[in-house]
Length: 215
Picture 1 (cartoon, rainbow, N blue to C red):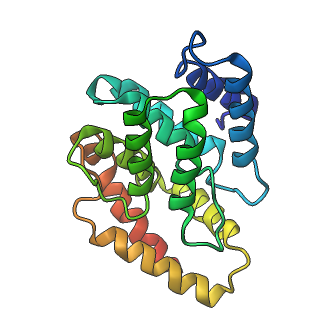
Picture 2 (cartoon, rainbow, N blue to C red):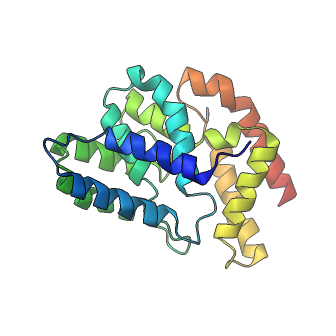
């Protein structure tokens, strides 16, 4: 059963509030940046890169928190990795990282955490772990977990991506999408961590190949 949006917002807001010490940063600033985040992820052009996507990432990562070196940076990267999303542009990751870099000092986040958050967001451009750490491995694996879900959910995901690129003519979209999918198949393995590999790898490859045949 799909999760209701109000439940998603309540869940994400709880994760958000737990990241900040109210003795250090004022509640109005925490609330202001939360509202800004929600506004971005609820833009009408978002059919996949939205709050539901963030919710799913947290559900995957929270049970693995003890395996993360810097969970706060990972969770901030979840919140900000798609905050700027324009399917007409190719620099969304950079713009999202820069957005986080500008906002997080207002939330009194320490410099080391900000720098790691920036790097984690940038790593989503090609899903290459810039550093061989669990922070990168689990974060990137969670971001690609959708590929390894059952076909019905994967198909809904691929249709949502098409809607985000509805301005692109079909012939050009098929060409570009095939290039993306081929790049994914060339990534061996798709998932860095044993947990994600065992759970998603085989199904992900099957789904990607199926989509390519249907394009």
